[in-house]
Length: 171
Image (cartoon, rainbow, N blue to C red; front, side, top):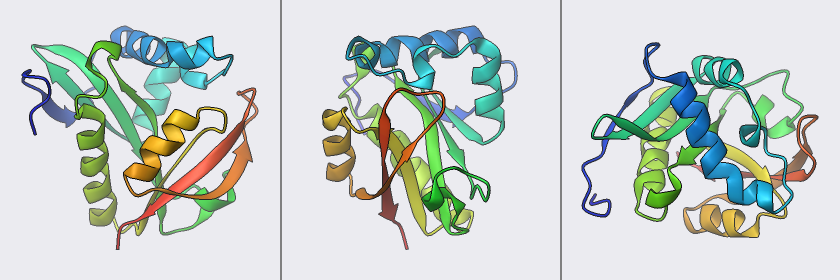
């Protein structure tokens, strides 16, 4: 899949990856949402939070020329989640999803989600879910174009908005 004429390599997160650079990537990627007044955790989390969130799931890194330009983390079923949908044993979900602002809309994020969808099925999941701010309608429209549907709502303690929970049936 061509991505604006740049060479992109996708690989699992490694413990020696630059966690500060990944945290900064998250902050920069989510900055337009912060400007909308939305307090996504990724707009303000510190490097240790980034590390914890990457290592509690299966993190994927996109890089070009040795620079990390994208990240997303797949999480398995979460029985104690405040989000009822995430408690299902056939539902995986993702978070920490970011693509460098200069490279958004180049197909990198969509390709990373395709990779997560395949990984979800390999791990025994039937659905891949996400949550995003209800006011971020551009995001819910994008996910809908990729086949995700609204399945509920959740309010997280660390955000200032209600989230739309979306899911895609994979098998």
